[in-house]
Image (tube, rainbow, N blue to C red):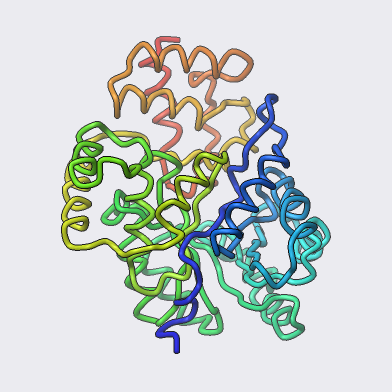
Length: 375
């Protein structure tokens, strides 16, 4: 018998937000995605996670082509999400479910989330009666398990779980770097969820790739114990070792990343005491690094009136802050603004900050980048 909902679920989830792209950098490489899907299922993993808004709907379409059309429906589970923030009416918001069903061809969704809840959008989910809608669709069998993904603090989470005890699970951002981060509140939110006995799926365990290539001091700590294990493996296993975890989502972008993840998650083992101590050392080191905590989700870019490639600019800046790569970062910055807006083009409208799940002060960070890169 399971101690909590989802205890027996394989602990690696395939996040479909960062699928491989063709040479144009925009079109999903469906053939490589098919190969990754086959590898994932062959290793006994089952959980796929997409969303109505991922890649402007192309992620859900790729899910159909790479997964649904090619494998028995009972051999995997799919989670997708409804995002009220991109809807202009209740009808439009609810129609996302039917669009997702059409795009994926899944017939039903094993898991369904109200997407990216936080204080600046929570009223929209209430006003559009989306909690009732999710419950109604669950009663019809269209949705098997319902919940919400979350990007705010423990106080609001406590209120939501009190008001909506019907949720089966929630999705939180948890990683070892953000465990004590006050703006992300990984630990605090995790503890609230477990207080209510709610199981979790986890997003951003590698923090948008940052923990796959942390500062050299962190890498040295890990390699002293396991010389051949990737830094990403430490991040994912850290989260998967927590109690109450259904699965840990990894947004894999190529076959190599899939192979690496499966190498240590096909036969997952929780962290031992020595490994936990190594994580604590890594947390101490990272606590002194003043990087920009961008995960490259690109939620900030769709509505930017100046067309500024914010995540790419921040990635260039982080090369300086994390690894001291001054000249490489300048080259990266010159490339990303070649056909786009510069950091200094920001007009301070604030739409990006409202959309950012990491709660980054984007306007001031862009001003800093503009000064550092001497536009």
